[in-house]
Length: 101
Image (cartoon, rainbow, N blue to C red; front, side, top):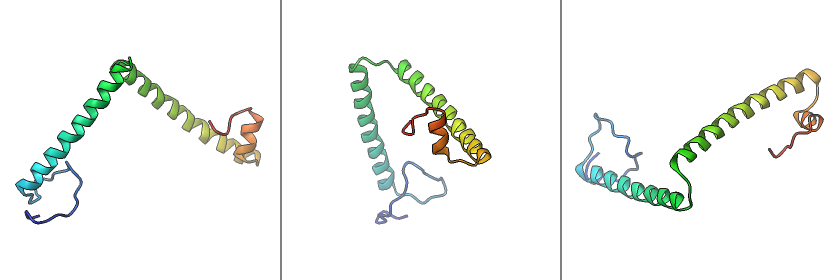
């Protein structure tokens, strides 16, 4: 990639074997600094709203756990539906589950 090469490339994925110009590296650094500034603003806003980082980390962890449990539940409902010869939607009704959940 020469200095006049304007092809899109995923930043900051830099392979040491790439022939990358200094200008492209400087542009990547600038983009990363801009992204960092945006993220810093978001963090400051979240903290200003009264959240603490540790609470957010716990919340994210719980969401991951919830999603894992939900995925397994969906798989089991699917297998049960096949075994019973019904649709998953029917099982939701049978078990009083919310389809939008």
